[in-house]
Image (spheres, rainbow, N blue to C red):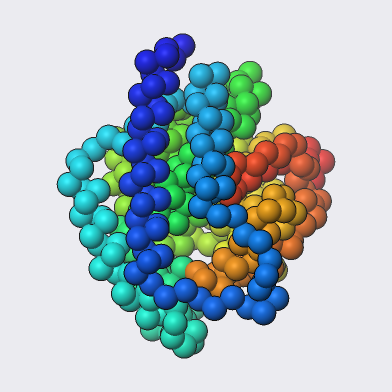
Amino acid sequence: MPTAFDKLVFEAGQAARVGWFFGQKVLAQRLTRPIPLPERLRGRPVPDRRRLLADLRLLFEQDWRNIAAGHYLAPDDWTGNPLDGLRRAVDFFVDLRAVEALRHGDRAACRLDDTPSGRYPRYYLQKFHFQSGGYLSAASAERYDYQVEILFGGGAAAMRRQALVPLRQALLYRAGNDAPARLLDIGCGTGVLLREVKRNHPRLAVAGLDLSSAYLDVAHRRLADWSGVELVEAAAEAMPFLEGTFDVVTCVYLFHELPPATRGAVAREIARVLKPGGTLILVDSLQLGDEPDYDAMLEWFPVAFHEPYYAGYLRAYLDRVMAPGLTPAGRSLAYLSKVLTYQRNSAS
């Protein structure tokens, strides 16, 4: 059981993390020109810095309660070479000039027109978040996780960790089965969630699926210390797995980057590859009405960060998207994200 000293170490580490990333977030805002607010958002209240930091503290309090309850291990994300963090910070701010040019330029420049024809779905060929190279460049793969932490002021890893709570519950539920459990992480990117899954459940067989070979290269390195890991380059709406292969499917920050028809196709594929009674754990952005004080900020986000399908996601009724194969089983909020769980219907 964690001690008072463990809690002190955790709190100090997370405070340092927020200071580092939130500070860079503020600096980036000062170094860039703001995106003009659309008329429909003018005059609507948005959370200020004090509110965001207060809600971040609530997230870390929730994070610690989960650790103290034994749902998952305390993070080790503040360990490593400090010089690497400094190098990534320099890289982020050097790249910020290119991001700024895209943000204030012609949105047509956000399309990726020089990729092999037919290899990727059309919706994917975007420079999401104004990234140079979209999700298809090695530089983007190396930079992405750091960018996301700055975007969320140091809270991204803690929000992602909330998936480990229903994961533990799902594995306990399946513990009596004869066959070992298997997990699939859809849109696994650079493997940050899978790394936490393997840290906490080292014997669990896991697979990660993503469209970007560059991101999967980073995931291979990140997961090299563990066995029982398979990484597959494929689209989530056409997964190369047999029906009923997995006990658990995780899906983190993917659905808001999919057009409506593709969301439905991915949901059907999830229901297909899950075993009857299996669990889907979905972590994604808040939607309109989840935290009303944040609604205007959420509506501003796709304008400021080039998320072409995010506005539609904000209004999507996810329980209906998942039907008929998946039944809602749980819901919780975590700062700017929420965690939804679904069970695969035995009869579907």
